[in-house]
Length: 552
Image (cartoon, rainbow, N blue to C red; front, side, top):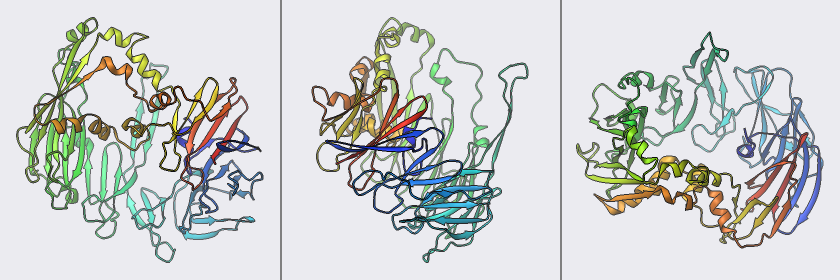
């Protein structure tokens, strides 16, 4: 796994700290330090001053280097916090909501102990909860703190035997008795080919985690526990129940999907695997949430179903024909009720695909909209739109110097946005010609592609904003044409658009990179000034060189 996604607060990268050298240059204040491999590194505000401190752990304990007022790391680490003996899980959290993170230890599955960092190092710690939980052998990082009920206070979620033990934090800072949310772990038996050298045997255990959301629309946070074959809904009425209020048995629903016999070469899109999906929306405007079950091309509507689950008699059943590729529930018609949309692909055989190898062509996709009629949908589409995909010769697409190569090369561009913290245009950081280069006030406005890569958009919302909103404005009968031949001129990757914005500009900051090392960098907010800072990691044979760059 790359270190880049792991440089967030309380996330880990393989790193550690040995010595610090300081340097200053124009746009940034820098701290450079070498780190041996085999140590885990995290960023977190341990002092409450709004700046990210450097936290690292090894087999023996945890240490912190603080982010000083001069925007540099303090040279010497503060007092080390050794791990207790036995089974220990640790995490970083702000239990008292004062802005300073603490080290929470789950010791021997019996007690939660919290250590606070002071001017003289870590204190002796205080036990905030005694409760029974299950822990693996040794020391492990486990995120057992989170705001479960959305009241702004950090709660404790401890692993139990067949259940999550949730202790809600009270107004006085103590923790209430355990709410046991029972779950069904999934055990997958792996039986390989006994005659194969690469056969895999054994068992895989999946323990469901959960997320909190208002499922039924009553304003309270409910709990949803998910595995591959089972989704359990624990509704707060007003308190969370140990047993699920209702369960969606995905395995049973998948058994309703039609069987397939081989590959259909005359209708290639029909080979797309049908799936079971579900959505919860307020379809009738009453405030109570409703349930939509999608079983292949069959749609079942249950008004009020978010509170009760699917019963034997749905309020509506719709059956789609053709090759159903995508389903969306979104507001279109100008009122507050969402419509149902389906994207359907035309019939296309292997012979047609082979012709596209040497001749250009076009693929058409139907976009059907079914109007919301007060909680159920029209039986026939009220809007019929098309998405036309114009295809050049496929041989040109798969050629080494063709469109595919041009698109793929964009994702190798490392350029990223560095927020300036004011109303000016953002900056751009990139690696060009063997250097890390910084360009001021030249980044274009954030694109939908950039939001998608950053996780701010889902693939569905990206598709909606990139394509469907335009068809919404055009109305019934409109066609949206996409020419694949133009893809090579389009900036798919955010890095490509950002690099194009720097063409012809002179960088205001440059760091020469050693060509013998591998280099990666990430933009992170290291203090509270609203500006994005930069962490550069250079991998050598024996260690890592970390450059901590803070905007002036």
